[in-house]
Image (cartoon, rainbow, N blue to C red; front, top):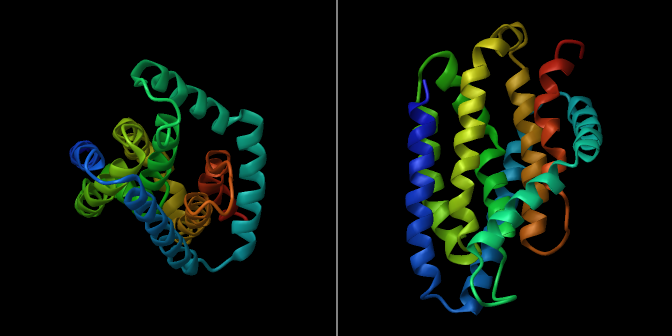
Amino acid sequence: MLVGTLVNTGTVIAGSLIGLLLGNILPERLRDTVMKGLGLCTLFIGITGMLGGSNALITIISVAVGAVLGELCDLDGHLNRFAESLERRFKKGKEGAGPSLAEGFMTASLVFCVGAMTIVGALNDGLTGNHEMLFTKATLDFVSSMIFASSLGIGVLMAASAVFVIEGGIACLASLVAPLLQQNPATIPEMTVVGSVLIVGLGLNLLGIAKLKVMNYVPAIFLPILLCLFM
């Protein structure tokens, strides 16, 4: 059941290791330019994913309620503190020399784990044993992790653990939510739209336009499972 998840985790690790080697070669100015390009690509992925829904009210309610839940649970704060604890262990001598481990971990975790292919691929992995979508995502993540790691450092490598936990968790829980998904086929498209809204927010962060606590909005992705029963 977890074959797709394991392959995806492995490609993120491999791509990150290659990217870390490249990062030691590329100058800072070039890495900054690459990061801005990644921000633009992230915006593109988010905007295209937002076009698949049919009920904007579900997206609005999901994001609003999800933000409240995320703030109350302080998901962003917990993940940041976890990433910073990792950073203290792996910290190198230089202060302020490029992005922190926490920034790399947060950014890469959200890019790799918030999106249509993650949700649908993991559900297919758990419900039917079809790994095709996660294999496709693994290929894309291999390339993305190389680029991210060259600019954001070792935090991107640490994000492989988030890929394993989140994709594996969705795959294992798929059988529990299967009746709800079968009852309303619109659920997955609406979950995809909400996830794409979060990806747009992440793109704005990468471009330096905003400093959104995207992690605090993550609960919104799962709210359409309930909202689609009534709307």
